[in-house]
Image (tube, rainbow, N blue to C red; front, side, top):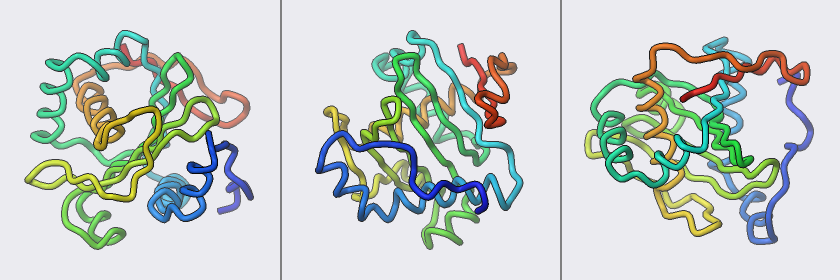
Length: 189
């Protein structure tokens, strides 16, 4: 991977987080899968989605909105993808959603693998991974949680967002080639 940095450009909020990062196999695989999908498979680019505060609050705290979109996610097909959800307060959910075949091949399990890492600007706050099956979301015990996040919180945020995103016809392009990185940012309202 010719473009991979020697060291990832983020910090940990405390020693507990630093220790977690050292041995976090799932998190290391998450970054590896994301880079491999982008560099080697030449699939859809890793996309960045800027969401307004109102949508962030809806995803996080509106029970009706969350429940209906979570149900939609479980009952309709969402294309495999990698991306970053950018909140205006500096929060960033980096995520990956694999298809069933990739999940079987890479994780040796049935269902669809999903993972999410949360950052506040460049500070690592948490990670969570699991698998989506016919029975629902199964969160694996490999996560790291800070800031009182509940188990399943990172993944459900991403799942609700992806279901909402799936219902949108058009997205507004708000940025391209930011800092010469060829990153594309879409506004989701």
